[in-house]
Image (cartoon, rainbow, N blue to C red; front, side, top):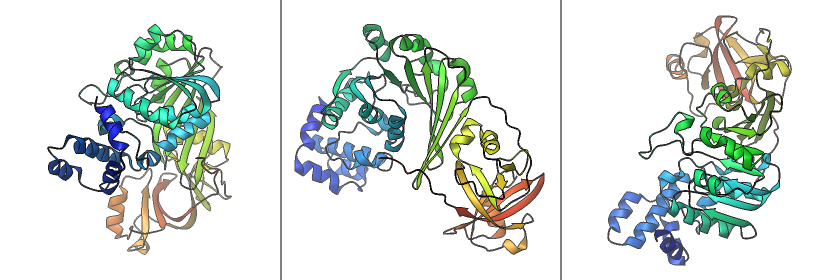
Length: 402
C-alpha cells in the first residue's frame, strides 16, 4: 500500500534530506521534474502537505518521520495549540475513544490524559497512516485502531469509555461545506443517545461559524460550551454533552495569544444590565471567543465597565482592569469624526458601530497604517460619531502551556 511504501521512504536519510531541502520549493515544478519517479512523487506530496500546515502544526512540520495525508485531509485538523488547550481542559482518566480520528492531532494530545485509546477513522489509508504516526509518538500507550465508521464502531463495541471525542466531517464527498448537523458524518443527532450510553461525557467539535443558541436547542444534553480562539480568531465551538443535566450550561471561553492566555467563564442566558459610559482612560474590546458567545455585556457587568453606546461592544473605565478578556487601549485623545488634526498620522484603524470601514477611513485621512503602533478607533458615544486615538496596552497574562 502507499502508506507502507511511504514509511519505508522516510526512514532513509536521503529522502528526509530531499523533503528538508525542498520545503520552500514550488511543488508543481517538482512534480513536473520528477513526473516518472513514483517515489519522488510520494515525497513531493509530503512536502505539499507540510507546506499547508507549517503554522498550524509546527511540531508535526519539524518531525521528518511524520507521515502526512494529502492536503484535503488536513483542512479540518485542529491546530496544535488548540489541541493542547483541549487536553488541558479534559480530566485525566483511563479510556478515550476518538470517533473521528483523521490525522490524529487531537488524539495525540488528548492521550496525554488517558491510559488507553480507541481511534476510529473510516478512511482505511488515513487510519493506517495515523496508526504508524501515533504508535511511534505514543509508545507507552495502549492504542486500538478501527478503520470503520463511527456508527459501525458504536454498534459493534459496547465497552464503556471515560471520554468520547467527536469531530464530525462537515464537508461532502465533493469537499463542499455542510451546514446542518444531520448532514455531518457521522450524524451526531442520530447517534448522541448511543454515545451517552457508552460514556458519561461526549465532546463534539463544531465549526466556529455555527449559531450557539440554535445548537443548544438541538443538543439539550449540553453541559458546557467551549469557545476556543487563537490570536483572536475563533477556531472552534465545542459542546460537552452529559447524561444528566446540571441545571444550567457553562460557557468557557479561551483566547490563546503569544503573550499568554485569556479565559473567562459564565452561565448561558445570564442577563446583564450595563450603564452607558463616558470615554474614560481605558477602553476595552472583547476577544473573539467572548463575542462568539454573546456574553460581552456579562463580562462588562462583572468587571464594572461602562458601555459607550447601546449598539457598541466597546467599553470603558477610569481604572485599569488587567484581567479583561480582550484588547485594552489607553486613551490618548478624542476627536470629531474625520478631524483634520488626524490627517497623515501613523495609526491603525478599528471601526466599531461606525458606518465606514477601516480601509475607507484610512484612505480619507491618508493615514500611515503600516508599522503604526497606535490606533484610531472609529465608533459612537451615546449615538454621536467619535474618533478615539489610543495606544494598545498589553497586560500580563497567564502563560500558555506546551
